[in-house]
Amino acid sequence: MALHKGGTRREETEELRRLSLNPFYGEANPLGDMTAAPPKHRLPDGPIPPSTAYQLVHDELMLDGNSRLNLATFVTTWMEPQAGVLMADCRDKNMIDKDEYPRTAELERRCVAMLADLWHAPDPASAVGCSTTGSSEACMLAGMALKRRWSVRNAGRYPGAGARPNLVMGVNVQVCWEKFCNFWEVEARLVPMEGDRFHLDPQAAADLCDENTIGVVAVLGSTFDGSYEPVAELCAALDAVQERTGLDIPVHVDGASGAMVAPFVDEDLIWDFRLPRVSSINTSGHKYGLVYPGVGWALWRSPEELPEDLVFRVNYLGGDMPTFALNFSRPGAQVAAQYYTFVRLGREGYRAVQQTTRDVACGLADRIEALGDFQLLTRGDQLPVFALTTAPDVTNFDVFDVSRRLRENGWLVPAYTFPANREDLSVLRIVCRNGFSADLAELLLEDLRRVLPELRRQTEPLGRDESAATAFHH
Image (cartoon, rainbow, N blue to C red; front, side, top):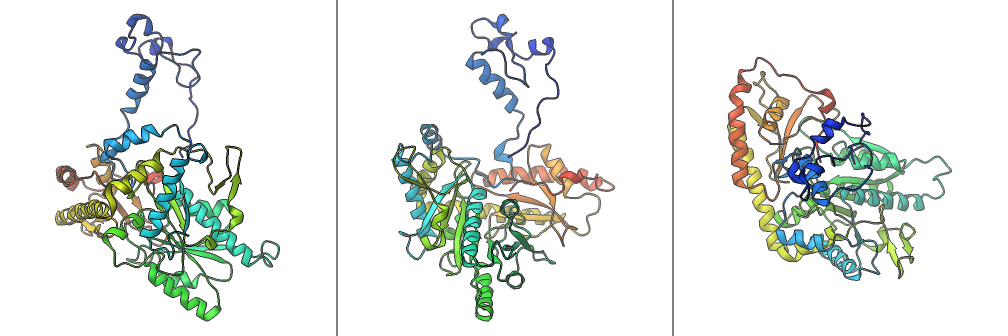
């Protein structure tokens, strides 16, 4: 969540406030209501008409970017109108209050069962899981379970004997994993990028593991370039570690995006609970799960993977309700929308949506490569996401210039540098989502063609804001 500072001025001038409102906003008395503009940095003294308040906020929000043209975000920006109506119907339901809203709780339970079946849990009926506000919370919960299971196994050494838990992952993980390690005092052991490998190397990860490793995180769909990490190869490397040392190290799959793509268009890829070492999986319902933000899911292959002492039971809302979450109150609308999308599309519907999105991504990547100014790092054939940089012979502009020029046409295409060991590499990343059609891809390509002649005439790159060089939206 963004952190905002308060207003720098206590009060705008009366004249500025008088001119802040269109006279027509005051339905009953246009002239009189021109004096009703509220202050911006303190609570107003009294109320204003709802239509006036709406128009004030609406007009300011017009300056936000168009979410459909935001190729930085993985988050769903389009749903069917019926889904919007359903979410409006449920916007006042508190997801935590399962006694008062038992049908919403039942929809959550069904979604967990559907995901357990989709991800090949040994016994979908006994797999445990929950909805969350997004993958970040789901990752936190999965990390907590890994740490608690490790601490129970090492009760004689932790915390008194100085053992410090660690978590092994690639340097390309989403920032929520860094937060988890910081908040829960776990050492982050990061596998660096090397050469043309932009994600975790299975053997390098296994080499970082020891008796204090609570688990290894594999990312099914890296936010840096859209590539899948080799989960099966990682599990095989950890099998070898167990044979050699006796250490049984679990794997968590961060499937924020890929866990809702691979089951439908990469059915032969083995990455999920079919691998016995995979202990838990998370996904974002609001990414390729095709639901507006925010909803995520965390699942464990069996009840044994989720320590019972992490589950709290409350009865002050009525009934006895188990809960495992960082948040307490949150809306039930997104869970209802997730269930709607599951029953609306089914497997074949999801397959059609994800395959179409991948086809758009691959086609756009090929056409951008054909321009001759860019070099592709990935092609959109795993996640429908691809990363590209300028071709080696291009010296008069860089990816930051391209991003800046595309923004002038309304497109949000992030430019950023890669992390340690490949900080020399700056890229553009294009995320294709449901709603980003072939027609929109053609419009993006036309705008790119339109700005390239001017970029080619530059004598050198115009420079970039160093503070934003690694800032991009996951």
